[in-house]
Each structure stands twice: as C-alpha cells, then as structure tokens.
Length: 429
Image (cartoon, rainbow, N blue to C red; front, side, top):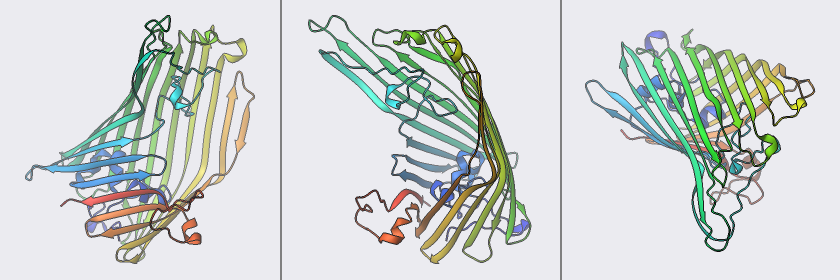
C-alpha cells in the first residue's frame, strides 16, 4: 500500500519517495493534499520536488483535464532535480474571482455587460490559424540550500487564435480578428531538509491578453491581473501513530478590464476592477492505527472576499459603484481513509462538509444586498493499484458497486463512467 510513514521524530520519513500520492488520491481522501505527504505537493511546495526524483507522473480525467510530467535527477555528488510538465485544461482564460471571463473571449462562453461577440466569417478566402485551448508548460527546479530543500517553479499558460480574410471581389473589406491570453506563475518553496517536518511555499501569478475586433480595433485590455499566495504547514509528531498538521494559507489578488472599442457601443469607456483576499487556517491529523492503514482529518475555517469597482460613460447610473462579496466557512471538516485490500490494491473514501456556518454575503450599490447560509458537502470513492513500479489511483463512480464492472469501455451508455479521474506514477529507477 502507498502509505505515509509516520513515526517518532527520530525516524520521521515524511518526505520519503516511497510514499507516493497523486491529485486523484488526495482528492478522493477528502481534498486533503494540504495535510498529506505526497508528490502532488510539489505544485504547492516546490521544495518537495527534491524528494521525488525520477518519476513519470500523469493525471487524466473525463472532463478533458490532462497533465503529464517527468522529474529528473542530475549530479550524483550534489544532486538537483528538474520537474517538467505539460498540461491541457479546456476553457481556461482571464477570469475574475467569480470565474467570469473578463476578455469577452467568445470561445470561453461568458458574456460581459450584455455583450456577446461572435466572428461570422464573410464569403471569401479565409486563412484561419487557431487554437482555442490553452497550452501549459510547468518547470520545477530543486536542490539543497543551507541544509534545507529549496524549490523554484515557473509555469506558462498561453491560448490564442487569429483569422485573416482576403475579400477579393466578393466582399467589400478585409477582416482580421485576433485574441490571445497568457499567464505566468512563479513559485518559491523551502522544506526542512532532515525530516521534512515543515514546508513553506510562495506563489506569484501575472498575465494579460489581447482582444482585437475584425477591423483591428482593440476591444478591451487588462487593468491589473495578478495573484499572490503564501502557504505553510508543520508536521507535529505526537507518537508513532498520530501526527498533527497545523497549516495556514493567505492570498491576495487584483483583476481588472477596460473597454474602449466594444462592438456594443454602450460598453465603450467602461472599467471594472476587482480586488480579492482569502485566508485558511486549520489543524489536520494523520493517523496510522495499523500497518497499511491511513486515516486523515482536517478541521478549520476559511474566508474569501472580493470587491468590484465599476465606472465609465458606458454604464448607467445604477450600474456604477462598488460590489462586495464574501464567503465565510466555519468550520469545515475533511475526512479521508485508505486501507489495503490486497497487496496490489487499496480502497479509499473521503468527504468534505461545512458544519455550522457557510455564509455568502453580497453588498452592492446596484444589486439587492443578500446573505445566504447554505451547507456544502462532497463525498468521494476510489481505488489504488500498484504493480511493481507502477501506481494507479482512481476517482471511481460509486454506481459501479451497484451496476457491476464494465471492463471493456467503463461506460454503461447512460451517463455512468467507471472512473471520473485516474492518476499514474511510475518509478523510473
């Protein structure tokens, strides 16, 4: 079983490369990647990449999310590790904190201020060079620094398309619409070098876009686009079976857009800017009551808030002003369990719930003020398989237990899929 090795402090091996986990595994175990030791943490804490050299890693899901990478180790005497990843995520673009597209990219599917622009090619000779889906490349570099494990990460995301039409004698004008999006994320991480009992990670994101109408006019442009976050956790070993994991996260961000040549003229000279803040504070626990059994629990609270400011001649008086939203959870509870069934298969289950207060609040100059207190809950089920150096983790539809297995396709042709997500880890050495 892919177990986390929790022992007394002198035997602590929290960062052992034999303790593999993936996005799928930590998701199924109650979305508990913050308190579990796993290779997926290299994206949150880049310093952890030093503990996972020479791996092939893959994440695949039925909503067209794909991620594949390899971690390489160089220099035997003073080793350093390089992680290289390529990913595919559909419908990824410049969004505000609510998830709405700020750039009016029609292929992302969100209108803005009642504006919806679609390019309808006129008759003629069309030369279209397009790629509606973002390309993502991620590199993580790690090495020893002052006795600790240091990591640096850099991620680049780009999506773009453009079209050119030569009208000739068929149409009175040439057109050339163009859209593009780019995002850059940089991270720094430091992990305690002896036993891996603490991690710190810092992340900074910035980016921008271009959005040009068929006549070449700029439709809109960014007015601020950045995020910054800080994560930290500590593994406090109480006895060979119990390790407590206090953790904290804080983040800030700014997003904005300014319209200047909107095809819908009512939106000309419109500016919208958002600022956001979030924090999360919790206490987790890893519990190993017996060999090849792991239970995890995380208990804490979180708050997210954002403020939007809307101005410009293109807005009516009742559309201008500030709009504030906040989301407060106190407390949340995350649970996860895995246990060995056979020496080549584990079973896993987990869940997330909010207990007493799950409050969403809206205060606005142009929308009715609202306050909602609604519960939230998710449950998960899956398996872990290991054959030699190969590990596979699944996020499985529980309907499989009721309907039986379909080993050929995994699909019952009525919306039931055997697995929603699968992760792979292969030890190259």
